Image (cartoon, rainbow, N blue to C red):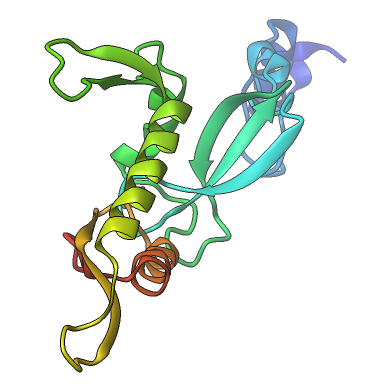
Length: 198
Ligand code: SF4
């Protein structure tokens, strides 16, 4: 058919087709992919290659936003808000949204610095070493300071006044519950606090 016999809409469509210009014209199916450029058609979802997705909780504050953690070949490739969570419904504040950045940052600290008693210099130690050291000191302090009953015919107290716990805003309800069980019922500490009020 001669182009001259086409109406304006048909002529426009012919022109766009001829020059491969992606454009969605009036009257086309709203779900049409006519406006997709060649470049758009080649794009793939950035998480398509993830072989695993796990659920986690943002480590920053006690709001406890849920996160989806995408993994490929054992490496985290992306972290985003979990839309199934009634708390954040898929959203994350700027701090939570930066979780992937600090998790994979080259400057992230993975060791501790330790200065031994009476020493004049710091030593670098692995994190596992620090955890063991803390556990040993807690056990030793509790053993040395535990009081079964107050002097005289005082009441049974089963406590230690030599240990205290101060929680931070990153702790959510579940973690605070476990900490209270460990320090209160488990170790006998009576000074248990949290600097956050939720
Ligand atoms: S820091 Fe932001 S994203 Fe993380 S738990 Fe708190 S409000 Fe949610």
